[in-house]
Image (cartoon, rainbow, N blue to C red):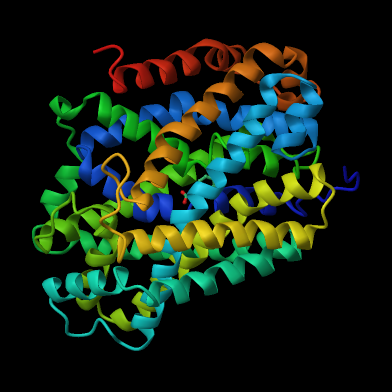
Length: 449
Ligand code: PHE
């Protein structure tokens, strides 16, 4: 196991890297379409409750484990609970990483095509219906999505080989604040579209009759996905935190900013959805067919659209880099493989998964498993099952197995910082989060009727 691990260079670097992992396609692409399909405002409320009651405490739990063990996700449980079944969390994390990377990289590739279209003015003059057709033609094509996918994976390879400090940290520091600003500009434009109120009502006026066990499962899955939880990503990043990093503050900042970006994405997209007569439940295409419509109506739309898709691509990149880092650090440290070689393997396996995902949208769309394409299956299984199960196990581990004193020392920097929420946190990790996740599973998979 390597003993001289690097740490993030600056305080801003810590936050930016963790926010970089959390903020990504999950906020801008996945949140709006999940909310659109699962009840709008009602979804948002359940989502917020999940972030607050399960998400934030679990971020803390992962940070505690990572910084304490100074190890990758596999090594963490090997160190803290040698020769026990807890090691399974490491392997589940690897599986979840590959599944998510599989479909996520495809969408990230699409954002590159959209940068290209924006630069060459390909959206110009197209009606809402034509933009939709153009999108469908592109996304169901066999080869063009694969070219962009290949480019995207290559970029990941070079960043991961470059290591934590040079790659991840520098990228996030500049791009994340920029993304934030541009989202706000778009929200303002979207709100002034004709008919925008209906979109805002859809997002902010909850119709509680829409809440059912499926909506709750989806909202919980989205919270895990968006916060990068339940697959050792924040354990791995936590292991690069220095002694001075304040875990509580970092967890709070990450979850607040992540949630804010998701809401901003909603405010940007739903007014446009209603204004242009697109169905809010259009699914994974939603962002790609609404956003170009908004640009057409903006002064300077040409520049805005390039900037927007560029920033989304970078947000996706800082998220995939964090997933790659989970598996790369695991293989590099636990199996004594060089970092470069480990990265090569991980990117190679991801390439296979993501090519299958990409083709499952186009030429292979008739091959389904449980009624879902491979793409949808990977998305559903990872976000709604693997991440919550991972989170459940991590919660139980920190709640019951890890020495309480260890958690306390990590959170309070050995007693130096005040922490009013320590006992509630342990209570949530021991009982509330595990019970809630279990109940949501049981009611959804038919056991509780
Ligand atoms: N949170 C990322 C996003 O919202 C996706 C992600 C999931 C990253 C799991 C790491 C681990 O886009």
